[in-house]
Length: 425
Image 1 (tube, rainbow, N blue to C red):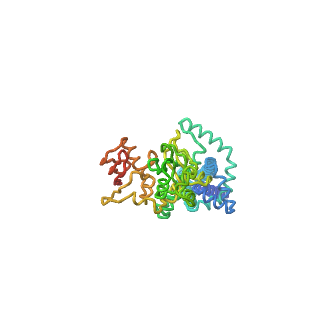
Image 2: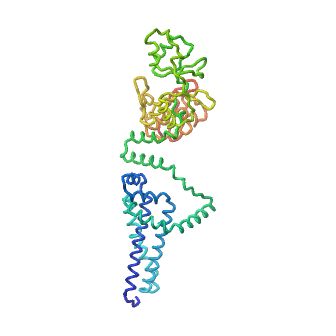
Image 3: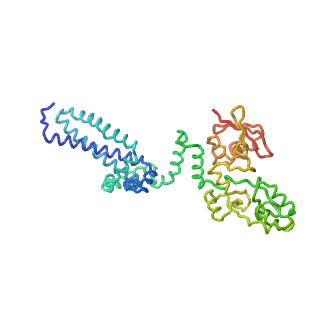
C-alpha cells in the first residue's frame, strides 16, 4: 500500500461515493415501485385525496419515458461512483486498485443499490411509489430532452430489426390483468369460484355476440297465426314460456310476439273466441346476430323489453335471446320450475367421465368443471366435436383433442344429442 494520508480529499471522495450509492438505491427502488405498483390501488388512494398517489399515476402514464429517465440517472450515479472508487483505491493500492474498486463497488452496488431497495420496494410498491413520485418527477422533467433523443435512437434501431413500438399496445391489457388476478386468487384459495365466474362473465359481455348464447331457431316454440283461437289459447297455457313468437305462413315470417299476460287480459272478460291474436301480440323486435351481449343488455334496458329475435345478415331467423340469457352469463344458471337444471345436462359416470348434452355450451361446461376447452370456433360441445372432426361423426365414434376424449353416445339424425367427455391425464 502506498503512503497515502487520509486527508480531507480522501474523506470527501469516500463520502461522495456513499451518497452516490444512496442515490443509486433510490433510483433502483423507485423504478421497481413505480413499475410494480397497481394503478388500480393508486387510483383508489388518489380518489381518497392522496396527492402523492395522484402524482405517481401521472408519472407512470408514460412508462417508457419514466424508465428511461430512471435508468439514465441510475447509470450516471453508478458510473461516477465507480470512477471515484477506482481513483481512490488506485492511490491506496496502485495498479491493484482497479481490481479492488471493481470488487468493492460490485458488492456495495449489489447489496445497497439493488437488492436492498428493490426488495423493500416490491414489498410496499404503492407506498414507495407515492413517496418517490415528486423527486422522480423532477428527474423525469430534467432528463426529458436526453430521454427523448434516446427513445428516437432506440426505436430507430428496433425498426431496423423489424420491431415496432406501439405506445398504445397496453391500453386493452386491463381486462387481462383483472382476469389473471382473479384466476391467481382462485388458485390460491382467496377468491371463490362463483365470484370469479361472475366478474369474468361481466367482463366478457362486450367480447361475446348474441349468436353465442341464443336459443337456436330449431328449439323455438312458435304459434301459427292461422291456428284456431282455442288451439292458440291451449298452446299458450301449456307452454313453459311466457313470450312466444307468432308466425304467418312459414316459421321464418315472424309477425309478432304474444305475452301470456296479454292473452289472459284479452280473454278475461269474454270467451276464447273474442280475441284477435295479431291485435294481442306485440311487434317483433329483431337484432343482428353479431350484436355484443353488452350492447344487447343496454338495448333491453333502454327499450324496457326482455325478448329479441336474432337474425343473420340476410334477415333470416337464427334464434332468440332474452335478458335472462345475458344475466346468466354473469350470475350463472337461473332456473325456475320449467327450466332444465344444468346438472341434468351433465351426468358423472363410474369411469370418471361425464355424459354431456350436445347442445350444452362450451362456456357452461368450462365453468362447471374449471376446464379450458376453446370456444372460438364453436359455441356448443357438439359443435366443437364437429369442427375438430371436420365431419358429422357417427354414433360410437371417439375423438381426442385439446386434452379430452369425446365419445358420441347418441345422435338425432345429424344432430349430436349426447356425448361422453373425459379429461385425459
